[in-house]
Figure 1: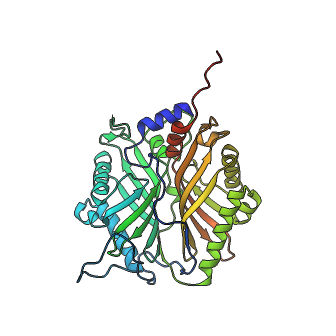
Figure 2: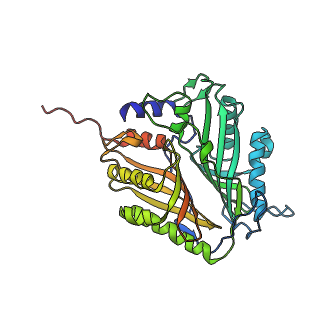
Figure 3: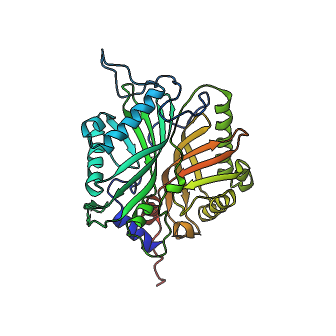
Length: 375
């Protein structure tokens, strides 16, 4: 753990998921009244208009912000702006008072500067939303991000990392809330930056990481929420799973998953079956006996449920999968969970996003120092 922590703290890309932080915004909220079946890419029924939020007003005479499928289309266009290096269009996707977790940026100009810095280091960087979910002014996406490290990369410690010529292949969770003008007011962006470092050849030998995500990509899908009983059922299924996790009830946690479920945990080297997922959770709970998931925002769209929140706990025992030695320290890290439920009300596909580098950084900072020898 000490060796890995030193590497992580020294090499994390500045502002790219390695810094401490929790999801800003409201207290835990659930919205059990919107759902619709998934439809074709960029073509799904409309949903209610984005709810008003603090900090922004619509100028008189300005066109109304997009709603429903229009929100999804606007979001996909914003990624097109990034991919095309249309910085003016990309800047307009963000509110001036943007709050950001995962990428350390406050305000639209700071976010644009981060995007430019990323492209300077990865000139061929591309982002492709694979699963895009909309509920009013909330949007969540699973984004496939790729690029080749051909430019200087600034680390969190301020050092410049020479090009490695290696390629990154990552799944990124991007969850946004829109302001009344239809721009991103808050965002949570989570990926496993330790996997990124592994792909760049920057991790010590023996540290596991996901080498590529091609087999884990969801089909291109856009889903817009509507009001029906399916959403309420799915929200209850996911809440029961989170409650079971917090009770250390592995039997109950397994029961919420279909026998054929596949979980993509971005911190794991490969996708997981139900037994593999439960074993991984059991090892995590042994290492963090007080570990808890604290949802901040939960909402449903069709068969999907999106949960963002913070994971908190104290490391008491070794967790080999995370290269933790159990020397203590506390964490409070953002997470994103996306569940896809089947008609029987069980989770048959899941995505779990947390950043091991953020965990390692927080533990390195909060772990107690060595006990001084007796005099």
